[in-house]
Image (cartoon, rainbow, N blue to C red):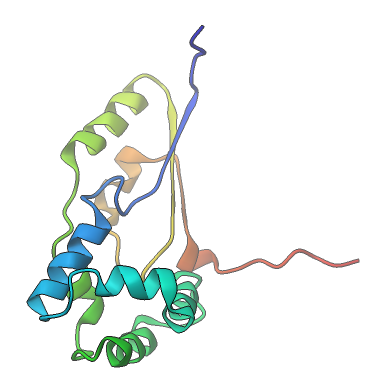
Length: 146
């Protein structure tokens, strides 16, 4: 028997947008890399995964990430994050679903790993979300030890 839902929690990239990895594949094609290069690096290369985790948690800035990851990919560093996400666009159906949920008094929230500061168009946030948590803004909180 279905239960009434009172909240809806969503991620940003790949949920409120088109597929992140498709954008990475497009980037690779433009940069004349194997289409799976970025995906492979993030899944199988510990250095790339650590760089991504550092960026997502705010331990390093975009300006620090771009030349380091560009060096791994052997591409130009300038505007690397913008180039990686150039093929990603808003998913209007998902945005409409959030609006519909809120119109039915469902509380909504965004929890997302970030790719640096200023990566989100916040103009719609008040309309779409009751709460927002973006990893690069809150960082990592270590549990208190007693």
